[in-house]
Picture 1 (cartoon, helix red, strand yellow):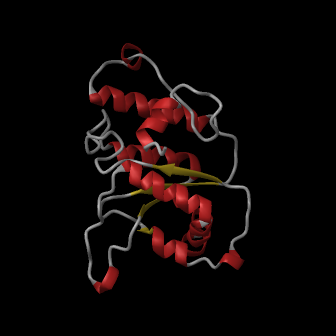
Picture 2 (cartoon, rainbow, N blue to C red):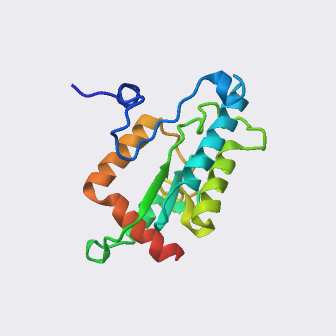
Length: 183
């Protein structure tokens, strides 16, 4: 029986033995309040703490953008790398996933300092360097020579897509494409 993303995530809540997943939970009162803005502020604080504690390792953060602000398209970067060119070298990859309605499910309502997506990206840029943080669209918004709106995908669809890409080596090829295009 297949499980959807939300069920899988819910069942893993609080588990410490899952590589690549770190739960940071606390009661609403401990996060400073109970409004969505307070929740976003707590999220940014915890993200800053997590990034501060990282061991040094070449890293890249990719945020999948459903808006016109993408730096490049995933599909174009993936196609830039030939299988023979893809070298395995130690690297940490952060996949920053917001759903069709942003990181907070409410179109990234403002935190106390401004836009949530921009603030998440700024935290990663501060730790990893501006050149190692990119916003990618999944598709090519210029397909057929015409500018098209980037479709909005539910988070479960994006996660499923990335899981398949990881399995078939697409994420590794995309990292090589990023190196070719931006470094």
